[in-house]
Length: 436
Image (tube, rainbow, N blue to C red; front, side, top):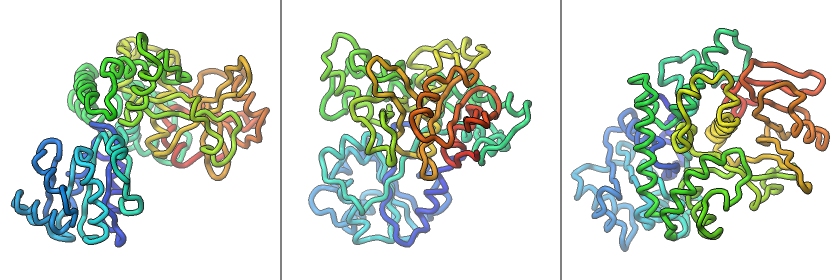
């Protein structure tokens, strides 16, 4: 399967001022697969050490963190030569040993010609125990596969190009095909192993079995969260997060029979584990958005739309046969999909607009900063007259362009500069924007 982020790994290999690369992301998003593919295509030697699987290797990072000493020990224990420019050294599950993370800086300072990659699925918990070597390590976020990569995996290369390239009109036949594939993607999701299984069998049921296995690995990780969090509360909050996509988070709504501090701690732990992503509220928009964002008022998106379906136990037959994509699970799947495509394309904080007025429920689903301007984005079905919150935003703030994602084809309200885009163009919009 092809991953677009692989080109960034290739660029890293060729950099003259190369730093050790730290791959971040939730478990099972494909970090190890990407490294192994890179090793196969670009290097003569490959040495992988998994600190979770081979815990005895943790002792190598005790005491002196001199990279030459570490490499000599690794060569001795593994029998694999470590040669600058020819060997890729991969330290997997590095969060098991926070001192190994610290040690990465010395590879940059003392052995800059050696290609070193590290990865981990619970890295943010390890960062709380150390002083992160800022400026000595390059980080790269790995997300689930987006819709365009899903199409590539199924062999629909031309369709993948349409969804990845700058937005352009498509025929009605192409539109219907992409909407049908989008419906399947919403159920299979973007976890690489799920897509691989679906591509092999064309069975959503078998892809769902892989989703169950991934969910089990996440539950097994709950006991590793630091500081320790109530595991039963974590399980309940995990489900609550999936069910609350598109809604402002209220901790009491995520779990019952637990105190708010316990629920909040569980929620923040799941965010740190990259299983959920906060979407911060902005009541008075301005650039940069982060300055105007609230840390207390927020929504969230789940890691992956397929897992979200599985956790909520959505009926697959209903989703497959539903005539209106935007109506499935009250529109939450559509908002999750758009947010997931945005997060994959930008790897940045997401925002939405919520009017700061008493008894007001006016919200615009997302705010995107593009070319020095703010673009309000709604995920809706229906004519302009139903876009009450979007019109409130446009009346209150200078707004050159607004975007509405829907299940229909490309359209435009010329007098208002509101552009309607098919849902499958969410990733393209995040990467390229759209012409007015």
